[in-house]
Length: 117
Image 1 (cartoon, rainbow, N blue to C red):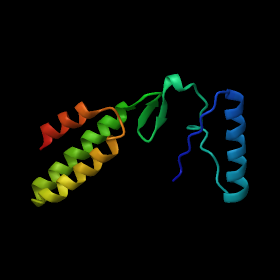
Image 2: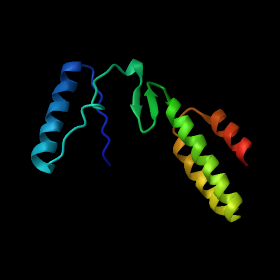
Image 3: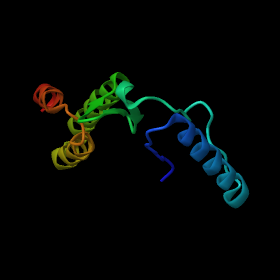
């Protein structure tokens, strides 16, 4: 696991935590925080997390996540048509949908699955 999310009421405290975590990673593990994705932001904007955007009360799939999800399902269907291994294709699709169960996107999952299978 290499993702970390910290929530607090004060921006100053979050920057202090980011500095402390960065120092720990450098000192103890010879790692560093990736500056391009280390951010302190209000939760009202949503927090990008594992291909989703997390808001207070809901989780949405990000646009690029929707595109990747649909492409992976299309690839799964093509592999099934070539290999005639429907069970594997369905298992792959179920795995992808399982990841998305955390997001508020039931209509998207149904729409894509209906078109593909």
